Length: 90
Image 1 (tube, rainbow, N blue to C red):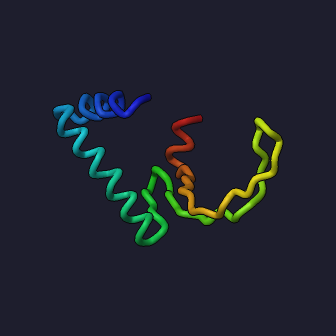
Image 2: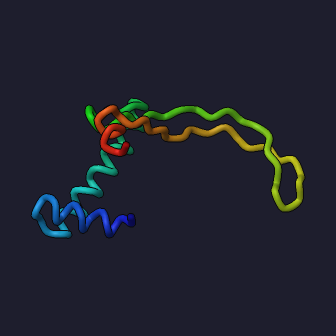
């Protein structure tokens, strides 16, 4: 599903215009990003939990040359589905 498909589905499900759905989705994305940057964790009951974790620096290999490279440490976003979402997917 693309972002445009998601906006269309949201608009149909909430019976609002696609423009309003797109604006709501953009606001949701911006709010989640801002909260993760500020606190590092965001939990939505019944949906899941977003969290920021630190990935350590490590060594990897360039698949084309086989040469060892250093991969720097960085922060990544992790998502753990809540029970309600996990049960709906089963």
